[in-house]
Image 1 (cartoon, rainbow, N blue to C red):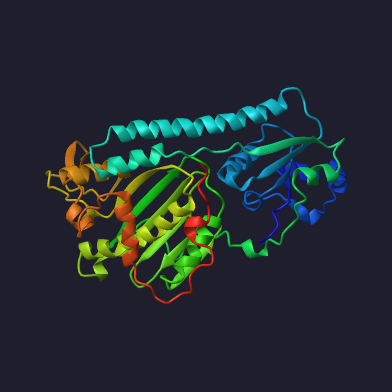
Image 2 (tube, rainbow, N blue to C red):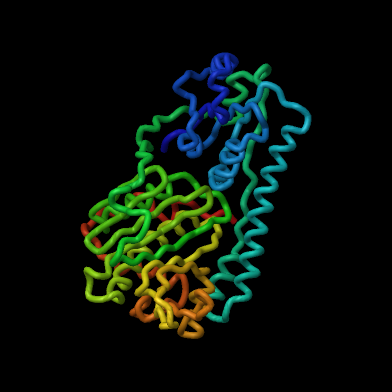
Length: 387
């Protein structure tokens, strides 16, 4: 087990030119190579020392949000400033309380929406998900002043943590442009599960866990800082962290290369379910909203209305979509003043999933390309739920 990461974090780049930085490094017993100025690096820090010039710096806010997502690890943050003015520490505390209030409000709004859904297993499952007890502990932080702090004070607070080698975490910043086009090509269809989590997403460790398991099912695995592209002879799955709260899981397949569009969908759902199931298990302490994004004209009935335009994409609330589909056997929507329908027989050739758990179970039909040894750390235990 590696030691937690103790990193001096420069949350304002201008500080790197400040001659006072040398004094701070000397007092804290740190060297230049301990400095982290890129957000990609310091957002994955565990116990951290943060050097700031302003208590309202937005990058400090990002670090605090990220720490809430890691709170079950008992993370501590030491915030170092040359001088603390009256009310500055209260601003930080007020920001943290505001984040917890925001999470609580999002849960309440999601519950209100869930109660308005059509009766059925999807509604029951959603309400059960939102009412499960998930107490989020407060993050731990303490403030220090440059003129009075010594290395021992910070180490005592951070439990004598050490700097670790980060070479194993180095990933490319470049997404797979050549193998995943921004728009869907002609003859392809795409299904996306867009998760918006109430708590800020952890860094790429969730993606890394998924990547390790995916190598048994996908012949090509390309990982970069914000995501991973998985592909095999069937199709592709593109998982990307869009922002601090949003994660897209997109599956794409060429329906012209299989028997029919229904066959393409039956091949694509297990690929999506494989990724979604593992992501949700890794983030079991993080409630979410989910959209279903459909792209491809064969996924819609495209009823003739006397015009030439065809529907080829639509975004739905996941739970509203499946509650309606399960209860009514059809899903309609307004498009340019006319009612259009989703082609459910094409989208779900084996029948409409009865619940999210049922949908995620499709992952069991994803064929393995190799017999791999069991993972040393079960994914379901990677982020234990805090009650």
